[in-house]
Image (cartoon, rainbow, N blue to C red; front, top):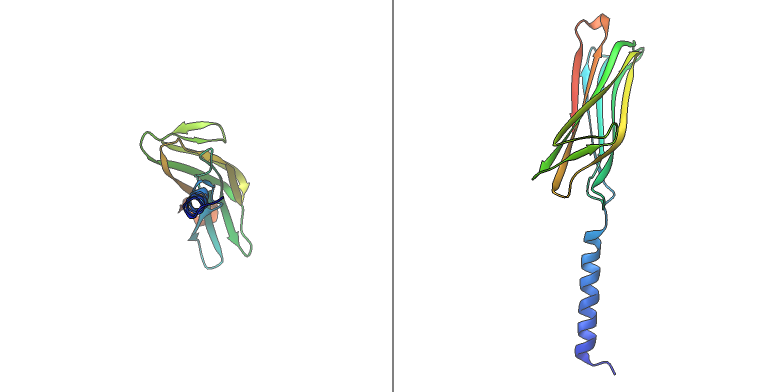
Amino acid sequence: MITYKKALASAAAACAVATVAPAFSAPASAHSDSNFYNYNSSESLEADVWLQTVSNWDACGAFQTKAYLHGTNPSNADWIRNTDRFNGIGVGVTVSVFTGSTKGNDVSFYWENTNAYESDLAGNVCGSYLTLYVEGYSTASAGVPKYGSPRTVTAHV
């Protein structure tokens, strides 16, 4: 026989589990940013960064970054470089990036293409259990002879 107190206790326990359970599930969210340097009205250099929230069970998230020359008739750059930087926020944080297994509190690396208009990077970034947040930066740099000295633009999340 179920008494009123037992039914109330069972209902309270079920509500507590239903309330707490979503807090332990990994959110499927990401942050992104784009920024542009305009050479003129028809050509620009773009930096893109997309970073999945680093809060799933293994404290890892995917990332994608891009340096890209846009235009109606964009010229290839002598070189175009995509420099990525990930900075862990927290106490005793270590950030691991799986595009060469680089570790540290502030990790950076780049990919450069010659005679091209695009440079992409993608991989996974992980924080330690003390990581509160991971910042991501993508810096696009390009050497386009008709515009003189190299130009740079950065996107940040």
